[in-house]
Length: 526
Image (cartoon, rainbow, N blue to C red; front, top):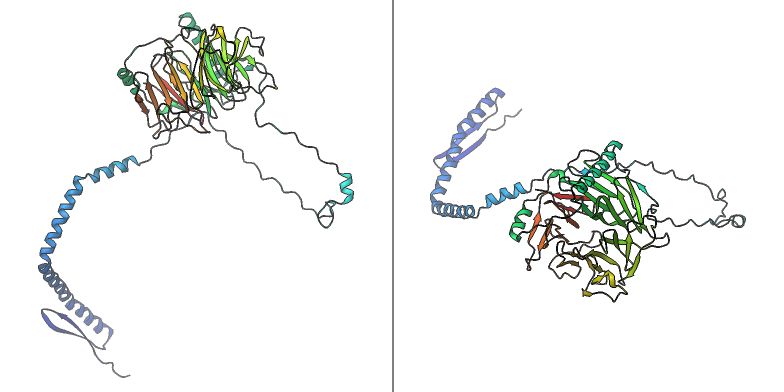
């Protein structure tokens, strides 16, 4: 075999001439030793060459590098002065997701897994008694009669007739249900024996001191509760000061009772079903706190008498009458009578003592051409009351002198529907109106899926009101008649996670409740 020629490799450096490394054909051991020698010989030369090159470049660009470093230092000082690092850290901390609140109150029932329906067995046209074109044969046409037409099934639940027992629908033991009724009975007797009845204790304060007191309210994690299954249409507190009980009525006639702080039932929640349509209004009897009156779109008015544990009928429209109850108020001309407003523009005077006549009213007055949304009685003169309607009219009436729709004492015309109107709770010298005309700078356009906002008075005072808000972050607005230009304050809290369409103050304690359109309530306490 011919001998291979030697190969020469040269490494050139600035400080040395060509360095010759010879790789020649030899045995493997000799070749490896020479290669190793070559690598050891060349490594410091290459490193020295690189270092020398960098030193030359550094000496040439030293002025440029100096200016560049000065610019970097100046820019760094400017950025540090803007506090970007601190702001970034705060944003990162605020973006950390908080733990989700555990849902308290009613629990959603688990959906049962349904098996897929079996497909029908395939049949030939002959077995189906059809001709080749797929049409029924002449014999089949003559023998087959037209199928009966199924009657249309109503999408609404049937209205309940007669007394309804107070039996909870949710997962509550019979013992707990009985304990709640006993507790409500004891509270009613205590209020009656102490001659407190359901009277409201008036208080006087300045806007600043009132604002300070309200700012002390907050929502604890355990005070966010699913009280009813569906959208809430009505909300009220039990009048007792030393025991907090909250009542809510929803879209499908459910009445939820929340015994705040109780562990019985489902986190203290009890669910009843006295109606089949929305419970539009509820209120306690001013003479007996053991009776809760409710009115519904199903055309019935009931009294929840805790002593008997029965929802008794107070008034019921005929079955063929689709009239709905929209609102009611006690006390005109006496506290034993109820003024009930309907969607047909009529006001009914119902005497609560005539339980046997559930479809008879003492008087019926046609006062508006459209739905009456709200009705309220003057706190000092029970003969005077006011109504608000979808026709945009707020009218003042004297029940002793009502002859027609034109016999009102005075009227106030708004450009759009008036959702509610209330006398000030202590003197009746002011009227709180909620309308769709945005006369007060407040976003109250709730749309179709939310319950309409209703501004309500704090019953302990004569000049402070509360209403929900569409703004984000979610909040509740407090207004004062003594502060004309803007809202007195905006209540916000991290646990207030949705729009509260309905808001009410406790009649005797510094507490506030809000309700949303998914059946949840939010309780503000000190």
